Length: 504
Image (tube, rainbow, N blue to C red; front, side, top):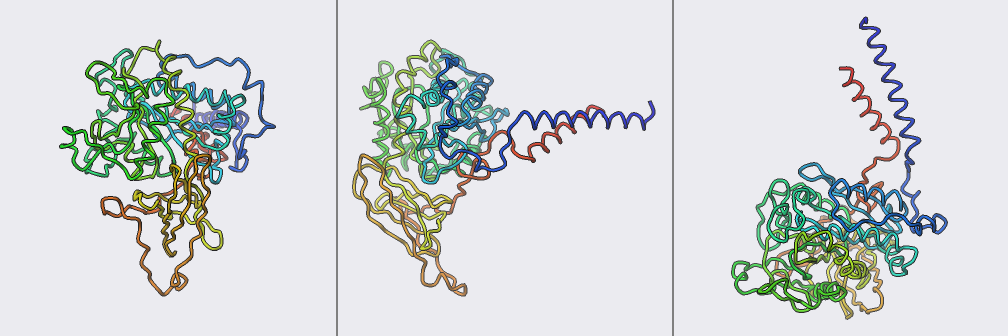
């Protein structure tokens, strides 16, 4: 065949291949151009009672590898599009996606004033119960929306982000029935992910891994109010701090390392433990193993560690994060999973509602404009937090009288006293007033003093970007599928490259 005819044939075949691909793409996928197309709350007109009450197959009580877990999450997202959104926060060393499922009546859009909460499991790949419990929790929440009033209230007022496996690479090499040992604990490069975060008390020189970097980026994009991460090998709810300034001495003394919010952390850990079937009994896993009063412990009092995730959540991002050790055996037989679900179901659901206690509100200027990145702390509790891009803030607190302190560039510092009650969160909007010199562009001002940390050092109060979700809204993060015309062009470009490579 002459070269001219060969190239002509190639172009014709390539054109029709791309044309058919584009048609299939456009017909096969609804692509929203505007985030406002999503319902801000669950639309009753959209609600399909038959869909939710039909006898759809239930998730089996068995372990799901990466492929089957991904298939389940995709199926749930497709079946319940107005209650779920599936996205990835990044990839593991071996290229597996770190899937997160949003479960909410507004899965794609952040509703002003609505808190974000998260669950993370399986950061140690051989601690497998939490991974399965979170998959069953996803199924329970979406299938109970129409019948359980508490679940409906929770999803109508909360955006729940569930990451079933932070270490899917490790899970793939772990072995069912192995109660102890380290096979599968670490990521594919041999790093313990729960020793891979910046530490408040000591310098952590361990090389940051893709999985922990993805999680740190995730936390910088979404302000999570409440969190829990799930492990195995004991039966206890552990709370910060995990480390202390004297960890070597502490290994012999088991001294607690308490946060300024110790009352809240103790409450959260106890709340999970007492809603669990047996955790609150504090029984040892085996003779000679430690016992835990009320099924809770301060992390450092149990054993100190450097670079833990829950301390990082609290110090760097203001998220109240606790660690749940769900099972004495790290990777028990699948036949025991149904029992673990019955023991943990109430705790898993009810704990999420604790995001709705304490204080919340907006930080605004005199004109009612939101102030992003305002530095906030509760007086006497020197670990601070910040307002979102919309001026929102939240803080979990127990009933009592408190004073909030707010600082922002070009504004006078503010203090306001408020009370918290048991029955519902306190709404407290704070209006900030510009300094007398801020309106004069010729004057260079000093920034207001930020909060002081409990050890005398200043808190890092630089504004963190609160973004994510479709169209950079706070919430759902970067969704896996591209949307709009750019997605079509991207698909066509990939197909065209494939055609050209095929023809050499």
